[in-house]
Length: 285
Image 1 (cartoon, rainbow, N blue to C red):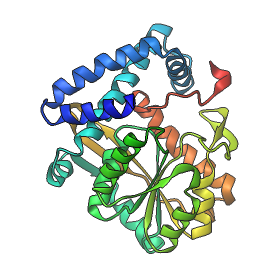
Image 2 (image 1 turned 90 degrees about the vertical axis):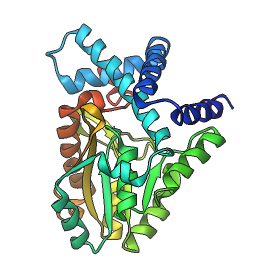
Image 3 (image 1 turned 180 degrees about the vertical axis):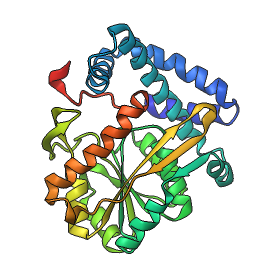
């Protein structure tokens, strides 16, 4: 109930306050969360230590960890703002790099594309943009515990033509869409289902997802990595990497390792926009 009321209040504020004021309020809440949610704070710091290596001091890690919390709070504001902006306004915020990779991926498998991304930048706006353009039909997402919040999330995503597939039960829906020549988006930087495999990620063993590769193989789909990064002033840069054919990558493990290489590239480049609040490498804390 409290979570639902919080989202309802946030959505109402997005209709009356400018973006700057909303971000400032979000930062205050993020700072409070940073102070009281010690497990989340430890997880972010632990993950950043691995991503950034041995160079940064503990004070630098702390500063950048707080920025992760701020970025996440801004992205929550942005998600609620989706109900207040027009499709034209959304489209105008985007700059696309690598659009030829999107076209190539659709050609290779006749529209059957599994979009691969991470909890990075503004992935919700990226999905909305792709939904508006007709390039994305479904997204895999974790179900929120609060029924009211889950309804809000589905309504927001559905407004952009996206079918929401619950993460833990998504395999049949993903296969159905891909085999029908449609596209599905998945976030693959956390092994939420605990059905992944152990692989080297930033040089350390981590438990990582495998479903995206196995589903693409079963459906004959192409994997297309894409990442939405938020730039100063609110502009969004959507990067598409060259498509990956899982059939040519040596099976599931080879495909997972190829995907991890792409993830590392963008997480290393934009570590403060990697918004993961659970330890990816538990032994690194």
